[in-house]
Amino acid sequence: MAHPPTRVSVSYEGEGLRAQAIAMAELLGLKLATGSDDAPLQLNVTTEGLTLSLTGPDAPGPIRVDFVAGQFGYRQSRISLRSEPLARAVGIRGHDRPSVLDATAGLGRDAFVLATLGCDVVLVEREPVIAALLRDGMERAAAEPDLAGTMARMRCVQGHAPDILRGLGHAQRPDVVYLDPMYPHRDKSALVKKEMRVFRALVGDDEDAPEILTAALEVAKRRVVVKRPARAAPLGGREPNHRIPGKTTRFDVYVKG
Ligand SMILES: C[S@@+](CC[C@H](N)C(=O)[O-])C[C@H]1O[C@@H](n2cnc3c(N)ncnc32)[C@H](O)[C@@H]1O
Image (cartoon, rainbow, N blue to C red):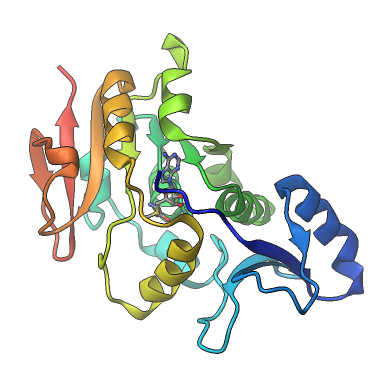
């Protein structure tokens, strides 16, 4: 399977956060960092929320989920239907706001775009440490008056997407299932490179992505959307009904009959 064993320890920024770090370690079944352990990844409990970092001399800076400031905050202010191919891919138009299940939530950026545009989004993330980062970011954002409405449209579920999809009752089936599986060498921007190094150390490649596509096609009411590198083969060799091209990535759209 694609999922390597994770070696993550939990650290904290000061004695005031020790109890929180112990609770987080227990919740995730991880150990507290001792300073002499060799865990390649650290989940850090800080005054600014949870962060995840690689350890070692050449490690990039930590990653965190931040829907309030930085890239996300900026993104929030510039989101428009015209500039987001993702919005077209999921079928947002006029007053139509399809419900979306994001089967590979990651750091929640794509889900956040869709929720900002008015879609209800369920975010499914398999890796418990990433899901913890995501929930932490969502809690902080929900405390911001400007983002509370968007956060109310986002719900995070930790688990294996095909199981979650197939466990949904008829009334819970989403209009759209969205997939953005890990893909080697997908984007070379500095930020993504940093994220990808930390991500890859934790989750590896998503080799079971074709299985998610199969389940998604069974469950989605209207369509399944897969984000792919611009020149990659379609996921699992399945040709989509149409494609929304982009410079570095494209969206493959599978329309339900
Ligand atoms: C490339 S990232 C997604 C990035 C995301 N679209 C964003 O905007 O931040 C892929 C994520 O999917 C998760 N994932 C992979 N296979 C999964 C599965 N079967 N079920 C749930 N999550 C999965 C990985 O753990 C990883 O966090």
